[in-house]
Amino acid sequence: MSELGLAERPAEPSGSGADGPVGVGGAALAAGTRSDGMRALRRAHEAVCDWSHRMTGPESFGSFPYRAVVDYYRMVGKARVAPELVALLRGLRIRIDCSGRGRPWSSPDAWLLDRWLPLTFTDQPMAYDGYAGHKLLQAAHWEGDDPERAEDLLLAALLTDLAEVELEALAVTPTTRQRTRTGAVLRALARLGEYAPAAGVPTAPLAAVRDALAARSDDRALLRAGGEARSAVRARVPYPLARAVEIGLLPVTTVHDEHMFIRCIQLFERLFARQAGALTDAIEAVHRGRPAEAAAVLTAAADRLTGATGPLYRILTTMPPESFAVIRDHTHGASAIQSRPYQMIELVSAKREDSPHTPAKGPLFTVVSTLQEEFLQHVADWRTEDARRLREAMVRLDDSWRAMKRTHWGVTLKIIGKVPGTGGTAGAEYLRTAAGVPLFPLLAAV
Image 1 (cartoon, one colour):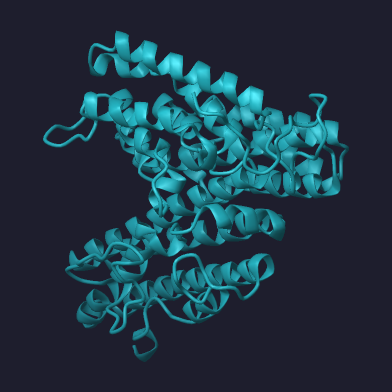
Image 2 (tube, rainbow, N blue to C red):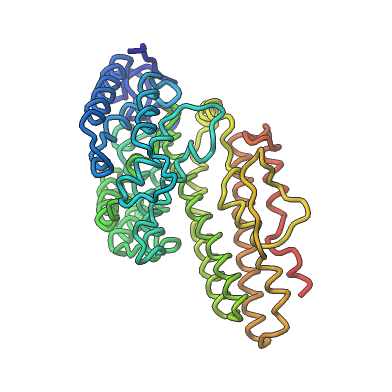
């Protein structure tokens, strides 16, 4: 097998008898030495080969050795994985025909393996979806009876996983930077009810986290409160979602901060997907002559976005610029402007003469109508009160959306300055300009 090195720091985590920092600004707790990587590679390779020999069909997919492969990838970083393991996983995908063409997968295990295997590939330039595992995190559709609850549980599971990682790092390396990061994550977790209310997480453990933070408790109290909140969330998350979160993060480097970065990207992507869904639901309601229903949908969407923006971006502000420089150097080609839900939000809101999206930056969509068009077409047919409420809801969502983009601009400016963006944009300057673009530019004339 190929000889392996580690991406940033070829040493064991602190607490294991090795030199060098871990946690914020340092290496991931999962990182290992060269010999650790060789052993992990051998375990992963043997586990996949063994499973491949025993695999009989889709009914075997649930027993795939995810843990061995994920542990290896996180130990060395995807930029340094052995090509023979990547080749084995590519061949496996071809062999079991996981493309899904011509047949929908009848079980979550088959669907998960189909979506997960491409994440292990090391193609360059890197694609945004492949970097953050967005297609895998569409697993909420397997909980079809209540998709809103499933999506909120997915948000809760993603944030809880991040809390677990940062709490473990705090226990090992109680530095000021790590304490700040862990506190930011726990504050976001404590406010979960504001942007994931349908998850139904018990309020008591979240309140205990808030109390521990407000009292400026010592690390032991934070670890205890955070652990109890984590357990409360995990007890509610169904299998497909829990599995998708467990396997859906394969960092490119061994920098500790990349785990946080990917989880935040995933959280925002799911939030954007909810916003896009709310807009399309509102269009349908307006088209059917139900402006009050559309107003309620948009108001809830604005509340969700407002509730999430502050806590999640506060986590991102704890990213050390030097850590992001390493991550950025390994992820050329992957850019958030390739986000499909983000594009959908702006495309279904209003027609725009100059779309900021091009095929090189991401997929293009064709929409039959936009919310602004539907509103302008039907507003004269409604009672004045219904029209006013819907207009206010649209303004509220627009305000929340632009506030989110202004915050994104500020965080980007703090972390990377004015360097060009990874998606071919002007970086922070592009975000500053984008923050001034309204979702509904003609609404002010109504």
